[in-house]
Amino acid sequence: MKKLVQSITALLSLLAALLVYRSVEWDWPAYLAIAPVEIDSAGDLQQVARHLAGAVQIRTVSTQQRAGGSNQDFRAFQRYLRETYPTLHRQVHLEKINEQGLLYHWRGSRPDLDPILLLGHYDTVPVIAGTESQWTYPPFSGAIAEGFVWGRGTLDDKGMIIAQMEVVEQLLREGHQPARSIYLAYGHDEEVGGRQGALKISQYLQRQGLRFSLVLDEGSIIAAAGVIAGLDRPVALLGHAEKGYLSVKVTAHATGGHSSMPPAHTAAGQVAAAVTQLENRQRPAKLEHSDDFFTGILPFLPTGQRLVLSNSWLFKPLLVSYLQKQPALNASLRTTTAVTMLSASPKENVLPIEASAVVNYRILPGESVATTLDHARRAVDGTGTTVKALGSGTEPSPVAPIDGFGYRLLQRAARESWHDDTLLVTPRLVLVTTDTRHYHPLSDEVFRFMPNALNLDEVATIHGSNERLSLKNLELMLRFYRRLIINADRQTVAG
Image 1 (tube, rainbow, N blue to C red):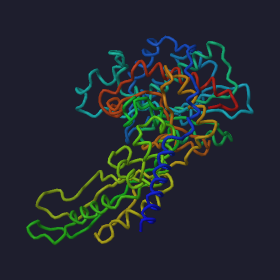
Image 2 (cartoon, rainbow, N blue to C red):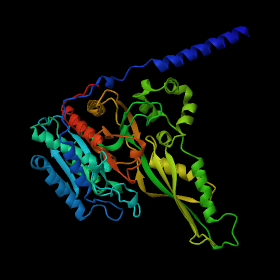
Image 3 (cartoon, rainbow, N blue to C red):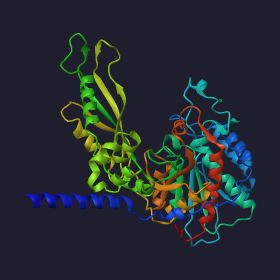
Image 4 (cartoon, helix red, strand yellow):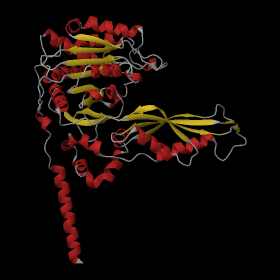
């Protein structure tokens, strides 16, 4: 017995030593060797801010009923770009796709190098009627105040477009000639699906037989220091994949009648039971995308977090339990289930003839629209309801490699454009849908990243009140796109 106890003790000691060893021994990320670049000029920042303010003042609002179309504001925005960036519009070829989609081609001197494609969209979501008073400055004023440009579209997504065009305009005036061709593609209906803008542009590029070494759109951000628990450093989150999308309608039918003589379960009750089962039968958690995320930041986490994360093979239940308590982290673990709409009787004393609920799923890479729909149908079994897909849904994206040209190019541009060497860089699954879903046939290296350092309060303004872009972030974007375009001329990017 004594020998057995000694053997078990020895094994436990060995296991403990192994766990500690794995938590303290790692290869420091190579990107840390990339230092900030101090010599690049960001131009006249106040002038750039005024250019963005002018763009915000043009109300290019998309709704389900009006996605661009012949709206005068969308044409006004195109005129504004022509007038604001004359050198670019003289020297860079512009192709209008489906009238409102804008595709710019800055020809490189090396046709043997695959080009890069920078995306953006110039439509915005509307300001909800009745919320205008919640804005510190009017939502389409483009006010420059308190260190910010204020207004709808500053973060999503006109700030990114203005920064890209400013950099191209400046480089052209300096006489810069890229070796690798640069394409800029701007859709006009991203907020309502992108099928008339981004999809048409992508189809046009596919017909040209083009392949891109990098496709980059909005999606992830730079999480400011403190946003990620345990980290006191900013982290550039390079979105290497995004979740799919499916909404389903859960329906129950009954004969109806007066509420004074109800059956054991009304149609509304059946739907309620189905909704409860859907929420209680979540899709299983998977750690692989979280493992990618922690790859670039593990050495900088507190000891306890490092111990668990570097030994996830042993601590998976503990890790999942911890991560799923935080909605943003839980969403990276699984296909999420969100009950968003309910409908039943039109009057409180009338039994519903039909009741329904709409449930929105965001689908994890590795799963599919079909498996999600099958799961929903099995989850409501026995409730007397039916489940029907609303539309065809969107499949989750492929996962871009994090050891290829595109990812390394983004790493380098992010580190070189940051003001010191504290910036960490790591891949991150994007939880929302972007226009990139239309561009995957054009490249294996499709990423989603907006070089803005945002705290949680600023993130909440996207699609909300008081949307604003700081002048510091505007300058950061100018530096980032400049470094990206200049570094893109390399055939390989170290780091």
